[in-house]
Every structure is written in structure tokens, then in C-alpha cells.
Image 1 (cartoon, rainbow, N blue to C red):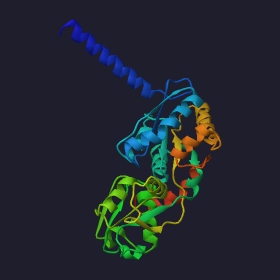
Image 2 (image 1 turned 90 degrees about the horizontal axis):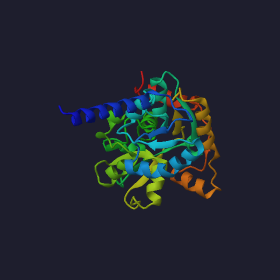
Image 3 (image 1 turned 30 degrees about the vertical axis):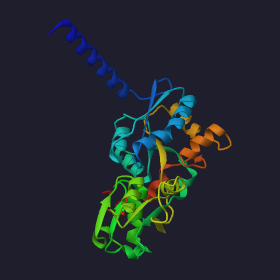
Image 4 (image 1 turned 180 degrees about the vertical axis):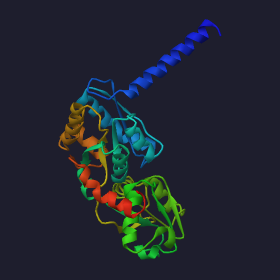
Length: 291
């Protein structure tokens, strides 16, 4: 091996060590980077688009560079929080419960949208014969991702309360992986019915990305707590306060803030707490998703 090759290898090793040390250190307000991610409940490009102005706002509020990294699945967000590879994450209610358990109760929910205190899911179909949940018997059905609160867990819980067991009563159960994908499944006839969160449904209708003459809502769940922004428990408390205050200060009367809130589909952000998600944890136990 010549000197040039050895030098390249040494530089690569040094770079790898630098990256490893970055992930090993707890973030503080003086750190260079605040690492952020989100559950992949929509297409990665859409998640990036929604986060871009919020990321710039958080940079201004914290004095840190903010980097958003999309992940492949819900479990990856939970694991990244637990292993300190990310500092802040957009989680669904069930994903927060999983993160709380995985981090031995240290993950901290700091803010939720006002809408998340009374969130709902929409059951949709393109089949004229389906008019109620009872009509789903013998039909093909699409949930979102298995760990999705609004695309799987809570709809399943309410189906069970209505006397329906998806695995026994439906002809086939599929998991689309994301809310917008569920609409595509139903529109394309891959599933006779499906369920997704109300926020994504409303966004798709407003942007005319779904033909409501073909695909329609036939049932809506009762309300429940859902999404929140969560930080890992060993984050610098001063930084946690800065982040919390940043979300709570977003004001729709401010044009810059209005754009951020619109992309987050939030009227405003409000404080939240771990106890808000106790009902979701009970529903997950009832559905056999937690032991």
C-alpha cells in the first residue's frame, strides 16, 4: 500500500471517529447540530417540505444548526431516540408510548398541536355498498403502518369496540405504510376500504389529490390524543426549554409563523405531558401490541 492510499484510509478513519463522537455526545445549546426526525407517515419528500421552514425557525430560536433526517420506518425513530442518534422527533401517540418504554420512561413530550388533543381517523371507501363499519365484513381493508396511532392502533381499537376483528372478519388486511398510500390503495381498488388520519385526509382533499366523487369518508372515530414533538430525556434542560418555548411561541398572526403552522396543519402548539397518552397505551395493550 502506497503513502497516498494510507493517507486516504487515515482520513476516512478520522472522519468516522468524528461522526461517532458527534452521536455519542448529548446535545446542548452550544452544539453544532440539533438532529431531528419524524415518523414516516407520509412520503419522505413531503416530510422534508413540511419541515423546512420549521427547521429554519428552530435554528433561529436555538442558535444551532438543525438537520432533518427521514427514516425508513416507525421503529427507526424510536430506536434513534433511545440510542441518542436524534434529539427531537415528531411522533404519533403510539410511537411516543413505544419510545417511553424503550427509553425507560425518559423520553419527554414537549408540545402538541391543539388539534392533537382531539384527533380522529377517517374510514374511507370507493365501494357504494359500504355505508357503515358493519359493512366491512368480508371486505379487503388497508391500515397505514402497523405502529401508526391514527392509521392502525386507534382505528383497530374502535373496530374492536364495534364488534369487528379485522383478521377474522375482513377478507384481507393490508398495511400501506403511510396515510397517503392508504388513499392510493383504496382509489386504485387494492383495498375496498381503509383508514387514515383526519389531517392527511383533509390535506389531500384541499389539494385535490383525491377524487372525492370516487373515494369518500363513511365513518369517523371518536377523538383521542395523538401526535407530539418529543425530546430524548438526557437533552440539556436549557435546550429543552428553548425548544418548548419555540413551539409555544408560534403565532398565526405572524406571517412567518403562519406558514410554519399551515405546513404542520396546526392552529397553534400547546403543552403536553406523558399522561395524555395513557389511553393509547391501554388501547395498545388491549390490541395485543404491547406486553
